[in-house]
Structures are given as C-alpha cells and as structure tokens.
Length: 80
Image (cartoon, rainbow, N blue to C red):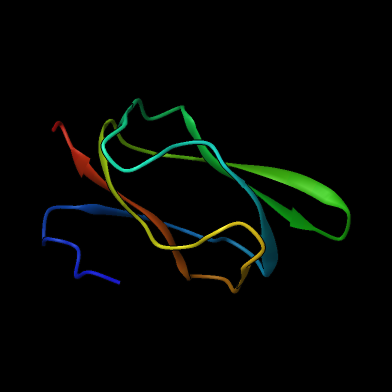
C-alpha cells in the first residue's frame, strides 16, 4: 500500500467482512455519498460510502479480501 498523503481521506472498514465488490477505480471522482465498495458479513451486503468528495487515489483491497474493523479500503484525495 502506498502511503496516503497527510490530507488524504482513508475509507476504512467498520466491521469484519469480505470485500464483495469494488465500485470505483483509481482516478475516479466521487461524492461523499457515493458507494466505493460493498462488504459482505453474515450474508448481509454492506455498502461503504466515500464520506468525502474527491478523487480515488488508491484501492487498498481487492474483491475476496477479508478485512477487519479499521482496515483501509480506499484512499480519496478530497477536492481533487
């Protein structure tokens, strides 16, 4: 994983889950309410939002990865 710049926003997992899908690619522009990925936990699908508008600079995970609470998923450069 590249180091996120100090002003970048790291979208993190809020629970233990598997990455079901990635809805963005590096370079995509997102709004705060855009879904960046979908996690699956206990057979439930959980959409994860960007929480800030900007440009996706890095996808930290890939489909099928298992993540824990606090693990980085996607990095967004606000306003970019």
